[in-house]
Image 1 (tube, helix red, strand yellow):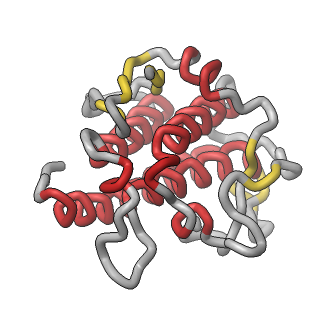
Image 2 (spheres, rainbow, N blue to C red):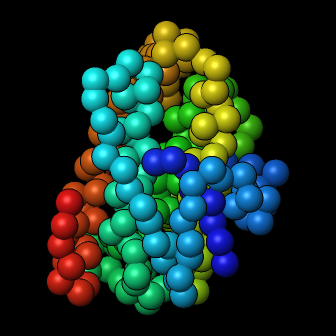
Image 3 (cartoon, one colour):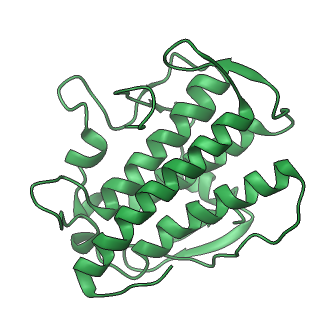
Length: 211
């Protein structure tokens, strides 16, 4: 199985559920990527490139966001579905697979739902019954589908921002006026925070460490 990935609860705005795009098709989505990430038995193998500098603002923000996207996948690399779904820090429902699902939610939440104004998106993982379904409902057997969903959301986020200025504004979940620049910086912060969690989860699972 091949997934094509890009080169390369939100802490702000409260509880949310994100949309499952009606166009979502894992096979078509996988073919859309420009850099290779090959799925082993469960988790992808990832090639990560550290951003070079100096660079223009847009290129720098995009490169660092892609770097953090790849870092999360790197923390999952080589693990089975059972390991990915393991909740290693009791009593938290946090798991590596849950983080992948959560960041797929965040991608859609900020870049599609808010920046592009697609407010009619149906939930992907969260429901009224399971408001934290991204974490609470992560299951070993769903790992490959969850990685495909993550890949699709990243692709859709790219499409949502292509050709748009960093100065383009939108209303956040609290009604505050934000710009695309803010969304990039916030997503880098969100990934960095959760990649720290992923460091600890991975070390707990099999002792593997690294940046």
